[in-house]
Amino acid sequence: VDAAINWLIQTSQAKGHFRTKNVRGRGAWIDGTAVVIHTGDKLIVNGRETALEAHTAKYIYESGEELGIGTNNPLTTEESRRFLDLCQIPSWQRGVNGMLLAGWCVIAPVCGALPWRPHLWLCGESSTGKSTVFREIVKRMAGEAAIRVQGNTSESGLRQTLQFDAIPVVFDEAEGEDKASQDRMASVLTLMRSASADDSGKIIKGGQDGQAKAYDIRSCFAFASIVFQASQQADLRRITVLETKKIKDAAKVDE
Image (cartoon, rainbow, N blue to C red; front, side):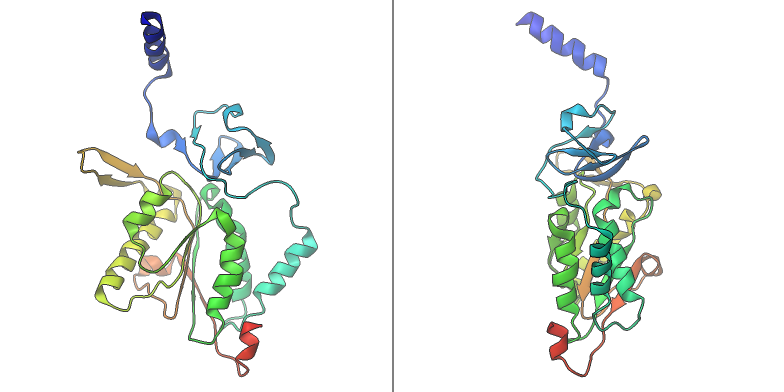
């Protein structure tokens, strides 16, 4: 027993101090010259699937719930073009909105590896197809690789759910109908703002146990609401607003 205890102590000392900043959750990361996608139960290192314990690096990749990302059956060029065509079908206020929507859907799952993470806000009046676009395109493309939340979700809840993960956040019903909702959304937007750039710094929160905890949020956000809720200039520079408009034949929206 004494020998085992001594071995544990000596091995721990040889490893050095444990650094929380070296812990990496699910999502895409830059690891030296390698691009690493942590899918929860495995790593994809420069396009090749690798066991979590087989990748040697200074970072610690913690296992987690599977994201449903793999290297089998990638989209062909033709299939990708069909997706782009699909994104341009809705009735947009601006013709470029379909391209911007497709772009966000493609980069959001690998947001952790990006030096700058853009966000989008889908808005529009009733019967303009906004909910259909968000449900059938944004949510389905994000799949299991995103956190899906509703309007009464708080900033602290999002932050604690993400922990070390670098995955997108899909935020439906992001309305600000009363003062409490507006304050809650303002806090969420502050979190989104800090997630935009690599050099934004960490979020440090004090705990009830007297120990501070640092968060490094690296997520792309997608919001949906009837009215665009952001008002600060810093948010306007980070969010792409995709607005839908009414068409004469409302039945075509559901199609």
